[in-house]
Image (cartoon, rainbow, N blue to C red; front, side):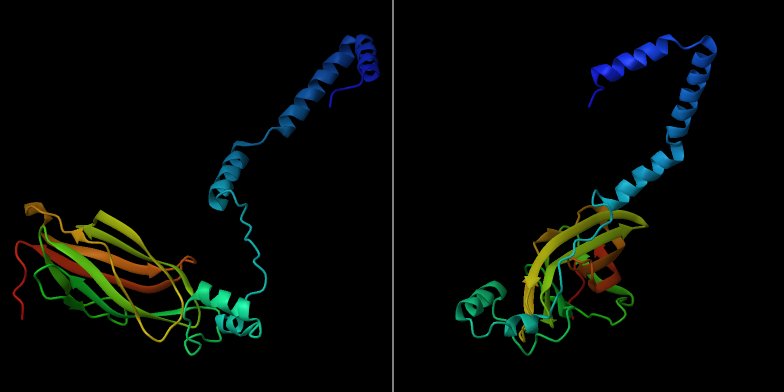
Amino acid sequence: MGLDDGEATEETESAGTMTPIDAEEEEKHLEEKIHQGAPSESSIYATTEDEEEDDGMGGKKINLGPQCTLKEQLEKDEDDESLRRWKEQLLGSVDLESAGETLDPEVKFLSLEILSPGRSDILLTIPEDGKPKGLWFTLKVGSRYNLKFSFQVNNNIVSGLKYTNTVWKTGVKVDSNKEMVGTFSPQMEPYTHVMPEETTPSGLFARGSYTARTKFVDDDNKCYLEINYTFCIQKEWPVEQ
């Protein structure tokens, strides 16, 4: 979008007839415009911070349109046999008694266990306040174990249920783990899931007490269970009762 030839000639001729005083005033005027148009340092940083907070989305949420409960979705188009079969294939065997009238899913954890080869399963009590008193459990150095848990889903589908676990020793974070559990539809029978096998650290310095936080959250970052606890790693397994 450059200038036309006629406009360029007209500007050149007028520039050639400017007096020294006019040229000096024009130069000052241009400097003022440049100074006024330049962004300040604070505005540059503010823009950068806004971009980091928005993560490139400009802070706008995608409008997915009106939402309805899972029960309403299942009861729609009941006379359409092909659509009903498609919904069954997509959602699985959804129990209408467990599909509530609300949009938010309900996930209730029923049990937590630690499995280790050659040992009896360690059944962990789940306190209502999420803070077990004293040591929650004790493990042996260099031992292999899995976390097993069962839970029930009601009302609606829980999407992208994730397990996160962070461990500290003497206030220093020493381990952090995140695992995808999956997406689950409501049903009367509880789900059971076994996490991948892990191994406790070995050596003298691995022994001692640790603090940890375990959480189960979904894709919307809604937390269904959070437990803040203390556990111990020692030379040998504790004596089984």
